[in-house]
Image (cartoon, rainbow, N blue to C red; front, top):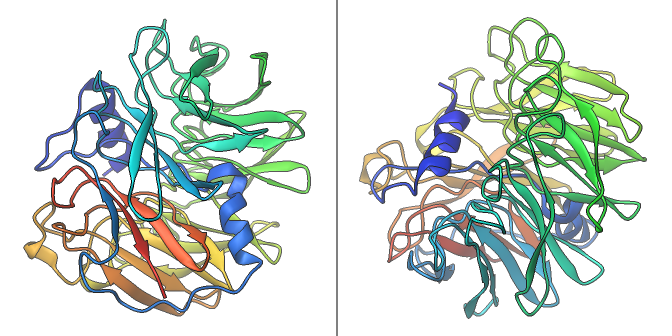
Length: 411
């Protein structure tokens, strides 16, 4: 089952229901991994399971404050910033900030006509201004790159037209040499997505247009920058199987598929999140595939040798890791969107409300926390961030009002 496409169609057409809908996949590490990288260079948290409910920073009400947050947060100037793809005054999404003590305010509510709609990606900060993408809205509704200042003033940096520049930028941006780089899930010269570059003044160019099999197609996660090149994942494409790829592309547009996930699925299928680089290797997650078909944590070398560090088994082990990984103090941390010890007791999903896990680069995996739905949240889609030895993230639903939460897991 291609979960991403079900999610994407749900958010483009309408807000999902409280009982069964999902919307947009998470987009990887915000700000090119700045918050996670800062944590990785310091002493990491020693995490222990928490009492349910004691880690909720904020529960969304589903109205003007936003609803269904699904992307990684950005830590900036002592505040946490994020987006909701729906909710707000027009129901088309918000940019919000929340303090670590739980005080939330909406910086901007999207209106759809000129400013875009469905801001389902994480934010980055560049020169004191926040930048992000919307997957729809504006004319001709192919998505936008926007900026928002500290006072909540939003302006559109660039509006996508579909071809040849791309359409539906569901992933966040990264900054490299003063330019913004990102991906579009579709559009481009071949209709299967692009890597693009856009200046803060709005000049856009396509770095690379994906070609589909045997190349790659449909990138839905943010890029990372490493030694002057860009690395990422595609949800589909790749030689033979079409189960997705890990790729590298130069800023001049030379692309190379590092690894294509194989037809038997044992190595993973459909990566929906960014990779991270640790000691010269790339680490990431696939939302499906593995021994039990419920997703994997994988490692791939720059030369293309891949191994599965962990295959999720569902149940208490967790399943469907839609979010990516962060490295903290030598270990990797991430969420699974579903699964957990509560199973059928979860109000949102009979397969469980999701987990937070820790895994070493040698493959030793530990479940740190299992979500229950109410009051603590359910379906953590997004990559975590680490701030002052505390992990922060979002759940798409759950919490007492059942419209999602910002949560923390502290030592």
